[in-house]
Amino acid sequence: MACVMFMAGGLYWTASVGLLTVSALTAYPVMVMLGMAFSLLVFGAANWSIRQSVAASTPDTPATLSLVGAAHTYDPVTGLPRQRLFLSLLTQAVGRAQREGRQAAILVIELEHFTAETDAYAMLNRNLMYRVQAARVKSALRTVDVVARLTESRFAVLLEQVMTPDEVLAIAKKMQRTIAQPVTLDCHELFLSSRIGISLSGQDGVDAPALIEAAVHALERAQAQGGTLGGIAGAQDMSAADSASTIAA
Image (cartoon, rainbow, N blue to C red; front, side):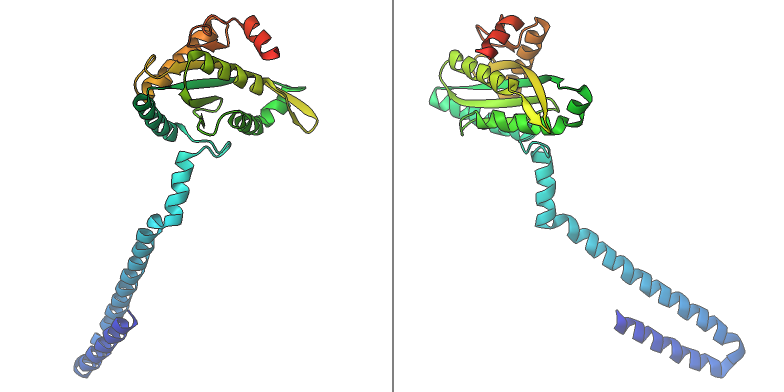
């Protein structure tokens, strides 16, 4: 670019000298203005080219793409998969279950009733509470199972290699006992309760979206009936009192 500027300047001064020999008084001011305009044009084109190169290269760097992908794939508060990744994992699990003659189960968990010594303290520590509960639920499961965060207070668990509905129901009750344990933060005890909706592959749906929808509907039915578990035999009729005795056991 410096070379272009030098050549342009040389042409300009050559033309200026030639015109000055003809009419120095009239040609010189015009050539000065033309030279300034030409220089500004060349400088602007060079600056635009640099900006375009930077803009074109920045979005395609591996580090940038990795950060963007992680932000859309994992929840920043809990580190758990988000719904899109969970759907993909569930689709793969349903396929494996069909090939192996097994069932996969979905637990949709709604965390409810923040309670603490002061409600304001519980609200301020909402994200920390979710992070702790997510870690607890994950640690209580097998390595083949998956926990995901669907919304702020709603989580999902994918259970692979389950044999019977009773096995799923036992895991759901274990989840409720885990969630009901108090979380101590700065000498404050925080408590959560939960409702869980359950769906089984083959019985409640044959694809990932249908299974999640069935589990959500089971959760909503349990909530409407005052229960805490719903979706499979022995769960949907479980009242709040029955659930409380199960958690205390």
